[in-house]
Image 1 (cartoon, rainbow over the protein chains, first blue to last red):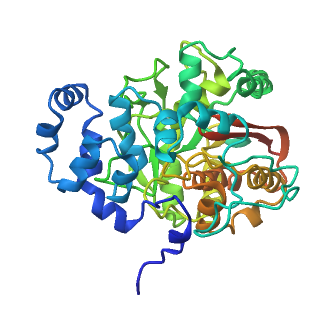
Image 2: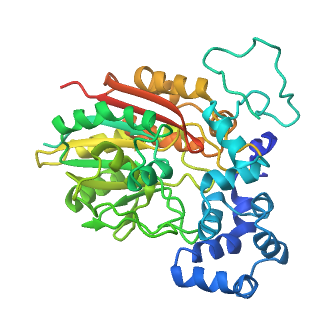
Length: 145
Length: 280
C-alpha cells in the first residue's frame, strides 16, 4: 500500500515525510554539521569545497549555494535543518520565511502584525483566495498578502 | 506521594528567548507578548513546583536525522542549553530529577508506552524559552526539570490521541512515586504557524482559540483531531500542538483554567498560553 500523503493538496507546503527525509538525508546532515563553529568557518571560507565533502546531489549543492530555500525544501531539506544555513548567514527565521514567500521583509512583518496569512484560500491547491466582502468572521480578521 | 498540581501550556518561539536575552521585552513589538505572562510569573512565585515535567520538541539541535525518537525522557542529572548556531543561550543549566525520571520511564514503559531513555542531551529553545517566560532571568532555575522530548519534525509525529493517552500514563506514573513532590506538567509549542514555503506566515486565530476553549473544557474531542487538520488549518509547524495533549492528559479532566492568553504575532507564530489547575 502506498503511503498516505493526503497533505499533498495543501498549497505552498511540503510535509517532511518519509519520502522527503530519504531524499534529503545528506542535505540535512550537512546542515547539521554547521552547528559547530569550526565547520561554519570552513563552509564560509569555501562553500563549494565544503559541500563537495558531502554525498549530496548536484542540484542540492546548487540550491544551497543559491540560498534557494524553496528549492532545498523540494529536494528534501527540512526547515529546522536549513535554519543552520541561514543562521550561519546571520539571518533570522523571519527573514528566511519572508524570502520563501517572495515578500520583502517589511511587507512580511506587516502581514504578521496584521494577524498573519489567513487560511482562507490557502487550504487547498486551486482554491481561490478571494472571498466575498464581509464573509470574514470576527475572530478571523487576518488577510494574506 | 508525588502529586500533579497544575499544567502550564505555552508556545516556545525562539525569538521570545532572544528578545529577553537582548533586553527588548519593553519594545512595543514585544511588550504585549510579555504582558501576557505577568500573571503567570506572580502565580508561579506562590505555586513553586519541585519538579516540572516539560514536554517539548527538539529542533534539530540534540537529534539529527541519525536517530529520531518519537517519545524520549531525559533521565540525566543535568542538561546544558544547546548551541543552536549562534552560541548557547546564556540561561542557567537545567537540573534534572533522575530518580523520578527513571521511575516514570519504568512505569510508563510497563504501561505500554515505549519511551526512549536519554542520559545525555542538550536542550534547545523548545525547553528554555518556556522556562524564561515563566521564571524570568534568575541565576539558577528554581526547580528541577524532566525534559520530555517529542518528535514533531519528522512526519508523522505521534497522534493526538496517543499523546493524550500517554499523558494519562504519565499521571499514573508520577502519582505512584513515593516522595512528596509538587509536580507540574508543561506542554509547549504551537500555536498556529508555518515556517516554510510560499505559505509561510499562516496564522489561524479561529482554530487556535477553539483549541484553547477545548483544551479547557473538552480535551477528549481535541485528541481526535487528525494530523491533516493541524497541518492544513494551523500550518505545517502548528502540529506541535499535539504536545499540549500530553500535558492535558496528565491533568484531571475537570482541571480549572486560571489564566488564558493569546497574541499574534511573535515572529512567525501565534502565541498561546494557559494555566490549568488540578482540583485540590
